[in-house]
Length: 93
Image (cartoon, rainbow, N blue to C red):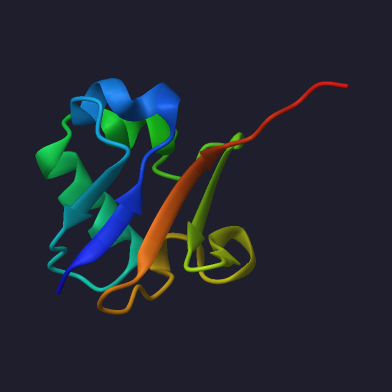
């Protein structure tokens, strides 16, 4: 199973500058994708998840066009060929 993960500029130091990484998760969930991403980009998982293992408050993650905060969070199913996007929240005004 192959999944594409879009990496924001701020996290590209973990991916050698790559804006997109293809991973082969062993589990077809967002958690499985993040595990596979961590295997090829060590340290990136801690930037996406907090100390309790939950998604960080200011990091948005989408599977296809669905915000995982409104689906099943880390248990959100990720089908073959899906695109996962990690997007840091922007605040200000």
